[in-house]
Length: 80
Length: 160
Image 1 (cartoon, chains in turn red, cyan):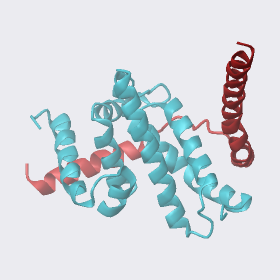
Image 2 (cartoon, chains in turn blue, brown):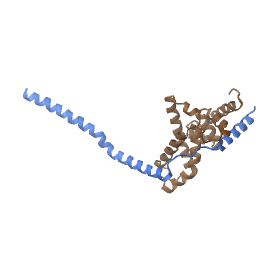
Image 3 (spheres, chains in turn blue, green):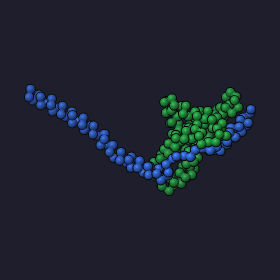
Image 4 (cartoon, one colour):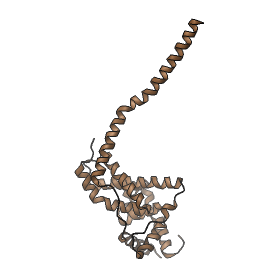
């Protein structure tokens, strides 16, 4: 079988495949997807705004704990 | 931020849902995967700065995103050893006469399926296929020739 026959065989097969029926897509309608995207965009903005707070929270806790430990050690030095 | 308007998106959705879904379905062989991937592809287009692009470029972008998501899913399935899910396409709603065609196509590797579909059904150029499947433009010709060879072997019963 030469290259041209090959090409025709494959082309014919793909044509038959393209013509076979497929199930119906069960995708959300366009307006629902649009709403979903609007909500996701809002969540993204919200996330961007709250991200510095989320990052700083554990840092603040760690600093507070370090300060408490420092004060305890210092107070112990004064008493002792 | 330049995103699509509701009206532009509705038009894109209307004109591309069926061809996009069919491409994904034929590449994955699974209707539920095709639903998920098509939906995610549309959502990504809505989040991207693509307003003002011509219809043809929007369509190209959408198919590119879908191809990327298909590849991600192949990798995930491969990792989880679920590759068999892609081997046997569903055929419950398809007439018995088309079963041979579908089963033959389903016996190909997912990438071969995507390559052949884009080349012969979507009539994409090699450059477009390269962009959609994230391969080098120079490799498309070779990959396509190999996919053709494997399909021919399945159709004729000869060794690839």
